[in-house]
Amino acid sequence: MKPPAFKFFAPNTVEEALTLLETHGSEAKLLAGGQSLIPTMNFRLAAPEVLIDLNRVNDLDFIRQDDGNLHIGAMTRQRAVERSDVVSKLQPLLFETMPYIAHPQIRNRGTIGGSLVHADPAAELPAIALALKARFKIVNKTGERWVDANDFYTGMFGTAVEEHELLTEVMFPKSTESSGTAFKEIARRHGDYAMAGVAAVVGVDAAGQCDAARVVFLSVSDAPLLMENACKALLGTNLSAAEVDAAADIAANQDADPVGDIHASAEYRRHLVKVLFSDVVQVAAERARA
Ligand SMILES: Cc1cc2nc3c(=O)[nH]c(=O)nc-3n(C[C@H](O)[C@H](O)[C@H](O)COP(=O)(O)OP(=O)(O)OC[C@H]3O[C@@H](n4cnc5c(N)ncnc54)[C@H](O)[C@@H]3O)c2cc1C
Image 1 (cartoon, rainbow, N blue to C red):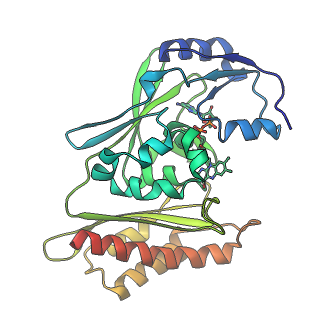
Image 2 (cartoon, rainbow, N blue to C red):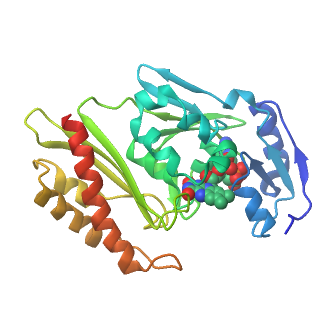
């Protein structure tokens, strides 16, 4: 199907985009890579009367570092992040995860900001942002604010970005040297949205004990899910296989409350949580020790 008719604007600056957002209010939608929005419009699940295309706003396309913090502009293509040496060096978890997102053709157009704001519960990048304690820069006509990943995701396809606002960049804070990271997901075919996936950041102190843990799942809740109780259970342990498995039990039976759909039953997703949790935490712990 083709989308319903819409008016089209292509601003050159953030300021112009914000003015258009203010003028058209709830009738308008921002267009980034179009890889989620355009299919939704073609299926007539969304019918914005106005599209504000961000593709000419060059200021939103960058990958920068300062003092080990990584800054990525909202309009940076996913493919650029996947190929960036800076990202590989500063945030190996993000770098490792990029190829799991859809297919190369989609990553050529799809943007970091589009994926983070679209907030699909099965998307990889929101889970990575939460695991790495990313911060989001949101602007509107009166100013800007930074929002922590903990507060950014508000539920199914919901974020802190309001109707008259746009995301301009995401910042990944410098990671600590004693931490290791890992990502894994289970999908029917490579490139499909995952039935479940997980990102882990695990810190190990000089005595070999776990001193930090952030394990975040995608596709098992209506938003990326930090396994709080399971992470607490890891702290102070030696991260032995038995200790990690015990925490995985907590993740599957206390932290997660997955629902079933056409892709996987709730029971199967709970099983995936347990298996994936153990797998990634072990790998992240090995990398932290190394
Ligand atoms: C076949 C297929 C398979 C896919 N598989 C996966 C997958 O496995 N994993 C995955 O994560 N994704 C997957 N995707 C989605 C893909 O990653 C999209 O690129 C991404 O979700 C949206 O990014 P976009 O730049 O295309 O945004 P768009 O589609 O242009 O926009 C998405 C939404 O974000 C809003 N938006 C965009 N930019 C901003 C901004 N700067 N500020 C405020 N709001 C903004 C738009 O208004 C819109 O509501 C798949 C897509 C397709 C078509």
